[in-house]
Image (cartoon, rainbow, N blue to C red):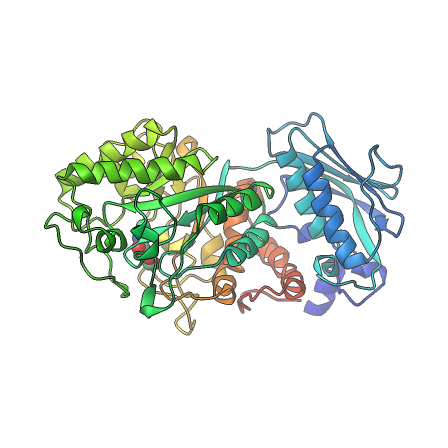
Length: 503
Ligand code: TNX
């Protein structure tokens, strides 16, 4: 019975029958509204052409289709009769909204902005047979189910975080992750660029941060850092996939790599050794020295200059080696410095213990649903509750990677909460969105990243994108399962959770 149910709604790539049409209910995150046209399918053929009002979005779609279908898929300068048209126009729902129409004769995506066209194309990708995500030419056919999807995000912030400090990840590895998360309409990638174990970005006025502070990683693994040009390459790669990079320099704690690089940043003037363990809370910038603020100003200034996005993340978490009064003084000055460089501050929710600027955003990482200080701070909040959203938590006790301090998180736990109602007393209107952080004390390769992020990150993406009225575990696990064959085609090393009936 199970097999029959799955076969009726999910395609099998090898099969060329009508059953290989992907169903509308295979899309993650669930669209705000979807109306299939029974019996109608569009076929991508050797004569299909693409027109786009957003050239980059059209190029990306055409490139992918050429790769897997082997068809020429030309880009044309007027909307092709019978082809794929990506048009700017007017839809309700803002910059990221789109409308996708699939008839027997044409595919049309309509959006207010290129971001909406990009999102519509991600939905279209998921409506194509899995083989369309292949890097090599596949036999086809290439049917797309007919109907209309009218879609817009629940939250403006849908993020992932990658800790490149505990372990360093190459530009190629970061771009690979960007490709994977873009398919689920995430629009922010937060890079945790500094911590006790490593400093990962060149700062010209403090060169030893990267060359010395970036020279190692957890367990003595190889370090590394991004040059400014490499960082900018990541930023532009992300931008063309509707993803804004948020750089984090964690302070005043989590700073051993900086303290080891420059003796003058330490209150006692003595540089500690580099650190490759996994303890937290032992390091602090010297909040009483003026040079500390020169350092913060120059670091944030150089980073702001290469970061087109509006946000700088100042960390601020677990500063247990900083006196509370000193923490407040320091974080208040650091926020002013970031603002002077034209950026809006994000901090881990500990930032509410300072005086958050009216615009400062708190990222909630607690393990309980009660945190009065955060709920009543009157600030926007990004929801990353550790017991639901932390991608470095193990799925279960047997998971080979990850940690358990916030519990174990199976797929159903990652999906089974409402970001708008999670933190007691926080007005729903203050919730800006959801982020899935991936700390990398135990994570060393792209395969490790993928194992922890998939399938939990798509679950978080659905919480962030889909109206809560669509929230339904039974329907979700079916949609999520439908991603499995796609991940196999894409080479994504996902965790085969037994909660999901993978086709
Ligand atoms: C806590 S949560 C941290 C990180 C660790 C993580 C491991 C937070 C803001 N800080 O420094 O990497 O736990 O799960």
